[in-house]
Length: 608
Image (cartoon, rainbow, N blue to C red; front, top):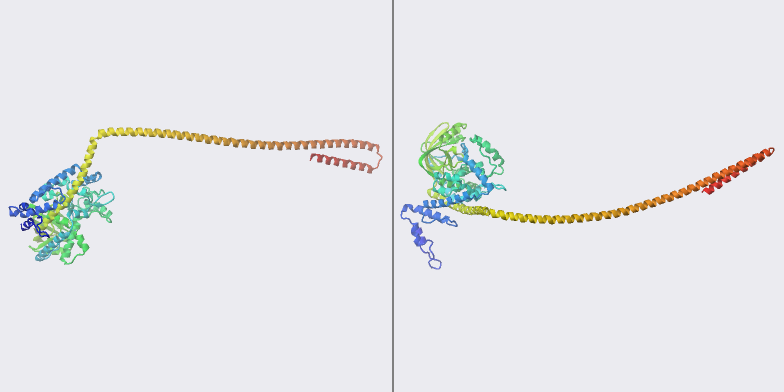
């Protein structure tokens, strides 16, 4: 009250003049309720109003109570959900993936998730010591939450990826909105309080805790993430289905198995705290990456109308840890630093603890008198587990220890050591994240609505559009026909030009051919003439030779005739001169032979 009254007083400026008060005096009474017990709620409500009014078009008033604020935010959330239902913010291809993932969740696979005991079992110590250590650890955890300079939305975006054409990408607003405002979450809204229903990003935060890493990949649109076939509900069979996918993604994992990873990191933080060791910067950053998410889940715990009894089976523990649990006495305290999954169906945990070998290394917890927590069966990817979630920094008191095997530890639930003020701060961080997501959702849905409106306008204009389209197509056809005609004419002209060119070339070729033919013929004629001349000359030579031969033969015949005549005359003379001596006859013969030789030489000379 004094703080508000000081805000309503006009402070003095540097020059000593009164300045405008931070809170108008007439509004002061709106913040100071008549009933003192409502004071805290009014202050928290005004804090919500102050945080959400920054750039957010929600109609919130500072005089509203906390419940009124939740109700008012619920109105805006429902309106946005209806708008997204009418105009989905996801692209068509991603919307189909979303619907398939939603259908897979709706079919609700079966099975009991076996958690790694080494990551979730908390160490124990003497009761007084563990309580002191647990309170100090809780204070340090709360301080780490305050020092982390980001909202829940930013933490989720940083730790989750979705499928895109180019590969894994940081989780987008459209996917988060489509899941947060899905009809399936709205169906289970009666089972959760106004805080969860007013800002359904909390549904997504709870839903992620119930999932395996493969389920998270499928949720965020990775189509190659396998679904769990019917009959593969046991942990071993489920791992057989999922391990091939995990092995293929070992070098480039997508989304982590958040419940195991976050619990392991909280366990590591607790171990280092118990060992009084200061974590390195890298280890501190790793242990803080899911801090806002874990704290919000813890703060969202729902009160139970009746006290509950749950069970939890831890298997494969080191014998030293089993001995510690076996030595506990009634009244000892056990501190579970991490979020702890149990089941309201105790037979599931009993079967798990009695079947896993060796049974001597198993511990079965029965937790009684539970007055708050989160029943995740309606949200869970595996509803037959009947999972009940205990918050961070849960303190248990031992009622009885049965030696077993397996060792049975009956405990009483004492609640979370997180302070109510801190839990309320975690809740007040939720409207800040929802404001950002809501505002971006408004922008996305406005674009989607604008797209649908444009499509509706196009549908209304469709008859006119068809007519205009027909006219346009007709004009295009006419233009195409004209273009075709022009092209045809152009082609005809080109063909005519080609034909004329071909004819010209043909004529040129014919002229060349004729010229060549004429030259050829001329050459042939010349050759014929030469041959004729040669033949003529040859013939002349032959005729000359024949004449020479004939003249020679004639000369020879004449010579022969003369010879014969001479011989005859000689014979006659011989006969007449029979009495002449032999020498005269020989001389005559030689003279006759010499005359013949002279005639032959004369004939040959004439021929040449």
